[in-house]
Length: 375
Image (cartoon, rainbow, N blue to C red; front, side, top):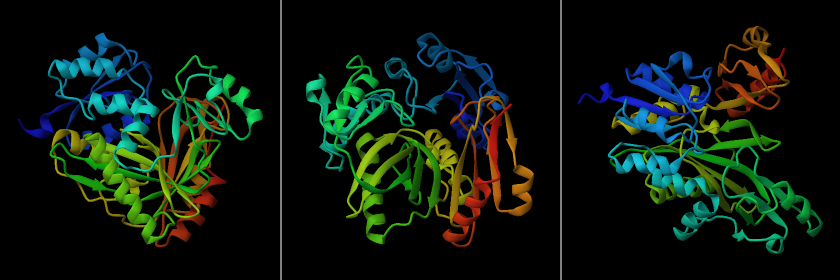
């Protein structure tokens, strides 16, 4: 079979799915998307859209019957249903097994720790009596700061426990890492086990949501070498096929701890669209279809800034014309979400420069101009 004639199914039609499709269509693939939203960002560029919930077993079977390989844009989907499809002979990347482990932060940490990969100390929480200062997390379902509560002192325990459902959901307690900065590594693994690893990204969060990604990360050569080695070990642990993101904390002493792993292209990897020859989405498509990887080297220092909704209402971008006039090195990506909500990811923009300081300065100027508001 001609590899480029394979039909790809994508579970999830949000911005990550849309960006996967943009690369897949350029390579000539037929795409079927499954998403609960009839007006999802991927709708306009999917060859077919199946409207169904992300845990609908019947819909998963319908999708599997239309395609040669299935992937997904988000890890919070029905992993047991994917396992059933695999048992029936359908091809799914990353595998349902790797997804099932990564979905549960406690199991994820156990797998990483067993492989000798540094993670913060952690334990399962059975009752409020197990709590002490640290980072309380739901083991499943958390993202963008949701599902976490910081316990600074004993006095915070009751409020933190109540905020996460008072034991109604499985919980774990992690040691709080007093980190100097957060970094992430985007890595891709092929069906034959070959791997490529992108340049390390430095991430700045605001209210637990990614705000800015700076590449190359402003870290020492020693820290860079250590982080790349950890990322490769993580890829070996999960043996997944496709693009993964490994988020890490770097302490003031240059110790590194893995925060979490995402089995998909990642927000912090958006810089690769302008910054690298073959971006994270293209190499994800290449990986799951058996094509060789494209180059992941950084072309120029790059900064990516998320465009979050400033208010609720019909989405409207403002400031684009002014930003373009002031700086031709800006590229804006809008995700096609019709409704803006405060702090919702509506798009991002990227700037490049010959030096990282120049890219950072350009990004800071553009942040004051480009906004997404609700009207």
